[in-house]
Length: 229
Image (cartoon, rainbow, N blue to C red):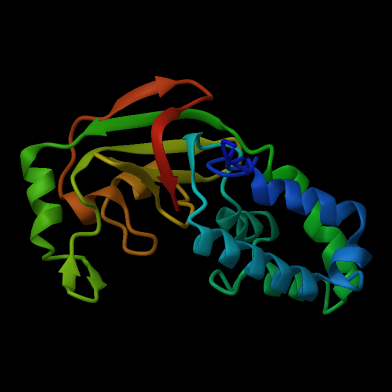
């Protein structure tokens, strides 16, 4: 008898909205998923969910929107005008709600509804020159430390993009030969994203002077590559 092997499909594999769907389910029945109507258990739940995704190697490709949930930190800062920029969405929502866990949870879902509808107005693109790539590869200004030593921030970079969002914020995106990477924080202006700002790091911090930026009016930007934050 011939044996038959069935491959169990994983519908969220290589698909960005997996965490977004999970948040939708939590919103309908927070008590079942979190044990209470409080924002701190939500934080722990989502941390665990994201850790599982990383362990399984879950990734996505294609559109940048809806934004990766990691940007919820920057989005919350922009919407609530928080002072502790690096404290995270949960801490800042709790502070905004004066420590009221249930009120902060309700605020989370209100802001999340806005967050998933953030889109792009336009973007600027710059192809990287040989000099730009050499600047990145020399690692004189920035690098990433791995077990075997230092590596350039970006491996085989091709182009950089600055996206103007439908909220007052901008994103920096770097396309390499193998993938697309996004800076994890929003910028307050296109000039900061293009320039040599330090926190967050602008394009010229990595690649040196970039003179030629092409402006494109569109609300969509598609990459047939893995997208990482």
